[in-house]
Image (cartoon, rainbow, N blue to C red; front, side, top):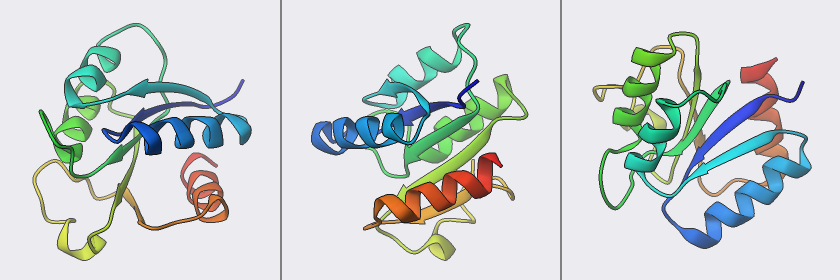
Length: 121
């Protein structure tokens, strides 16, 4: 069974492109345009293996808050953050767990594939 990824991205073009890319890599993708939509999906019945979220979202909960919410409901869930800011400047924020991964923007499909393979096994 394909791993299930919750993609949280507020930029429509980036969200749509990533959804197609993740699907082409063989993943089942659930999509949220903001933190509130992500929380609704996480609280639902769908199994989710990984949350792939932009760290900074324009409105509502940010990526770290989504990650904390996800772990509260699903303790074994994996988290992959993406950001244009250096990972070291984000690791100490509330909601970022010790095992969470970062993929720095800009990245290409190979970097995304590699990160997901490392995290999901």
